[in-house]
Image 1: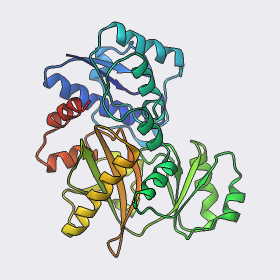
Image 2: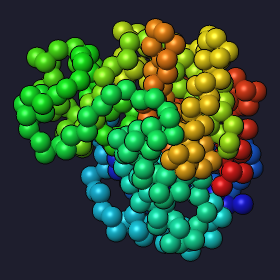
Image 3: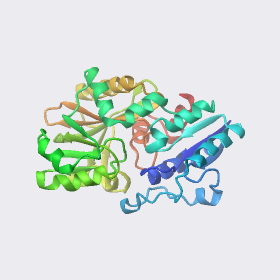
Image 4: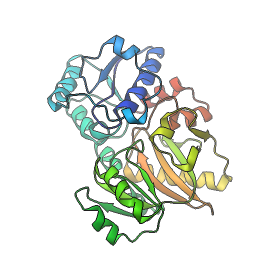
Length: 332
């Protein structure tokens, strides 16, 4: 079976995707598949030497936005056509953010009639829009923090003037991931800096910060995996704390009352179904001091790096990394 692994790409999450793709490529080769590594930012020009040099961990945050010099969309179209001509049986999509996760690559693969892992076009597009995800999940009774959506072209001073949310606030891009551009704002004086940071990447989601614990639930097929608790140094789970070893503690299964753990899984599955995800995804929550859960967002292409949460949850459920990758392939 010929499997092409799409990784890298041209989004602000490129470096995380390179790390995920490297781990997936190694696992698929151990499983005996014929693997074609494809950095979508470079087309089919990736060399075995470049693949071998990819580090296990993503780079430091200040290197995050180092994208390929070219963002030529024609290169992307040509790459998908070449995969079709190569007789690829399956694309394992390990892109994060941007066109790799918002439904655009999924659309091209469907046009080319190439099967691929993960959620389909509509679910991918919906989940990339954090505001729309919250609205759909809320219709199914899933609680979410109070929030405000704002277009990136709006003036930050005007947003601040009409803000009707309680501080502290979370300010982040509405359609980016890996906590890129995220800030925790404790007062009006800090808001404009956070606004500019998020708006530089896209439209902005502003939501009330829930004091308490950070939890996440991975869905694999139609099953919720054990709940993971995330405890970052300093309390903010940003890019640095996600991908730099030693910056965050993880507990899986999370030390929760059984009723809370069951409720987190139930709400995660409800959200997964509301967005119409497929294969696998991760649903993030905050839990307040009273044990109430609030859904934050859905990640349809969660990280598969050395510190990523889906592999941790799978491990707690008795699955090694290669087992997880094989399961994702089978869920196509």
